Structures are given as C-alpha cells and as structure tokens.
Image (cartoon, rainbow over all chains, first blue to last red; front, top):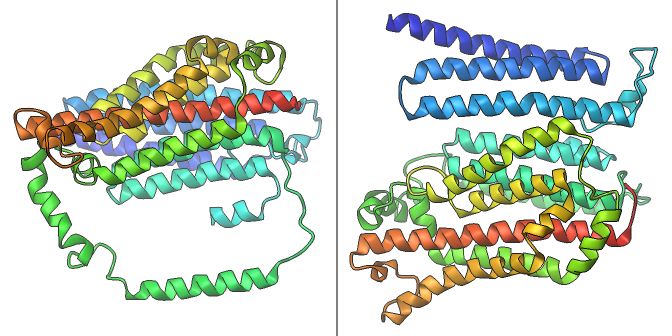
Length: 116
Length: 318
C-alpha cells in the first residue's frame, strides 16, 4: 500500500514535469502572443498543480501537507489571473484584428509577456 | 546567458522583465545551495520590489535605450583584462564546498556547535545575523534607512500635491476596469500581509527574518496602491507616518544596544535584557528583527510613493 502511494506520487510529479516542458515547447512553437499565453497559462498551472499534489502525497500527514495545500491554492488562484492580465494587456495594446496569424503586429512590440 | 541578452537589448521593458527572470535564477540556485533565507530575500526584494521600482522608473524615462554614438572599445578591453585577472585570482581558492577551507574552520564550527546553547534559537542564520553579527545587521539597516532618506530628500512630494494630483492624473488612478485583478487582489492582500508577519516572527525556527518580511509587506502595500489608487493608500499611510516608522525601526535596533549599555555591559549584548541569558537573547533577536522589518517596510513603500509622486509632478503620460 505504501508502495502504491509512492508510485502514484512519483508518476504525478513526472506528469507535472512533462506538462511544464510541454508548455515551454509551446512557448517556442506557437506563432502568436495569445496562443502562447494559452499554452503557458493553462498547462503551466496544471503542471505546477500536479507536482504539488505529488509532493503532498509524498509528505504524509503533518505540517508540510498544510503548507503544500496552501501553496497549491495560491498557485491556482494567481497563475490564471496573471495569464489573464497579460493577455488582456496584450489585447489592449494591440487590437487583435490581425487576419494573418503568423506575422502578427502583436509580436513586434515586445509586450511584457514572459516569452523572451 | 540571461545577462548577455539583458545587455544587448534596446527595449528597456524587456530588459527589466529579464532582470526578474535573472532574479528567479539567482533565487533558485541559492535554494539549491541550501541557503533558503537568502533565496527568500532574493525572491522578495530582487524580484518583487526591485522590478516594481524599475518599472515605475521606466514610466518617466521612456522605453527605448538611446543609441550610443561611440563604441568604447578601450573600456571593453580594460574591463575584460581586469575580469580575467580576477578570474585568475579565483583559481587559488579552495574547491567549492570543501570542508577544510578556512571559511568553514574557525568561527563557523563555533557557531554550529554553540549557537543553540547560547541563544536558544534553532535557526542558525537568524542567530548569526541578529546576535553574533548584530553590528553588521545594524549597519545594513542604517544603509537602508539612509537610502530612504536620500530618496526622500531628492524626490519628495508634499502630501497635498499627491492627494490632489492623485485624483486627476490617469497614471495613478485605481484600476477600476480590471475586475478580476481587483477581486483576486482583495482576496490575497490580507494573506500576503499575514504571510509577511509569519515570516517575520517565524525566523527563530525556519527561514525568515526582518528583511524578507519587510519586502513582502511592502509589496502587499504596493499591490494595494496599484489596484485601488494612490488616494486610497494615502488615506491609510500618510508620508509622515512612513517616515516615522522608518526611523522607529532603526531606533528599535539601536535602542536595544543602548539598553544593554545602560546595564553596564557591551553594546548589543542581549544576555542582559532578561533575567536568563537565553531569554535575553530571544528577546533581543525578536526586537532587533522587528526593527529591521518595520524599517524595511516603511523605506520600500516610501520609495514607491516617492517615485509615484515624481511621476505625477512631471505629468508625463505613459
């Protein structure tokens, strides 16, 4: 039974690492600010959440569990908010009436997104 | 690598964000080297407050770096040569983390063995910072206070000007249209302040201390100012109270030393603050860290308000 918990925790952590890696790869592949925000905002939160849940399973009952739970709640609250704020600012700075997707004016200003 | 990109970029906004990324890397490798207190301080000060202040500076310098006409090759050669000499000098240092290096021999082993017995504080970093090296920490605190005084003397704005301009100027208006951000900030600001107090008073047992706590509390106040406008924040913390609190922290720290002197002992000798030396050390470390936290909070927030006031005075649109 203890082994099952261990295996589950390790697999969740690896899944979380893979999600974060996928988000970073998406950061390079996607052509536009908005698609990049979609990739990093959603998948990064999921990856961090999975890593935290895996760590919670590994930590057992104690102080660390409560602290990890609080960190998870904080991440779930703030990470989507930050993605929303960045995307909203990008929208306000450059109107998204680009019909060509790739060579967007959204890229040319070097917005404050966490890309570069 | 990040540093090279920061130097070569012309867009200052992107450079500042990259400095935040550099701060994140610094905090990560501090944490990897088991220096968690330093990592916490780097994350709180070097990323949160420092980047905020740099961004508010950006609002009155403009976003692009001016193209410099001359290429100072001689300076580059001299700097490169000096840097190479310095790196050559580091070849004589003992290997990283070796147990026989002098830094780990003389005083460090004394601290590790005797610290808990003499001060009763479990966190070694806290006891060394506040008790064994209390003078250095007092010096750091006075440096922070002096920086605050310098900024106030250069960039001071009267309270009345801040309040009247704060309502009309668009730059410091509350963000009323960002509904989601306002709601999330309203939820989080009390917890950020609570976390700052936790970091302040928990420094006996875990990573923490006055500097980190002050930076976290100041960033909570700055978040409130960004969301709800300068007007609302000045109703809570007027500038004179901030100056008072900045001085109060230094007074608290230095005054603890004076109390020790009044008992005919050395300056900043905490053993005499209570009947039992260990209780005295506890009390001394608590008071000293409290002083540090109060001053750091007040000075960092005062810096932010000074920059904002300067921005209002020159009335430059974003």
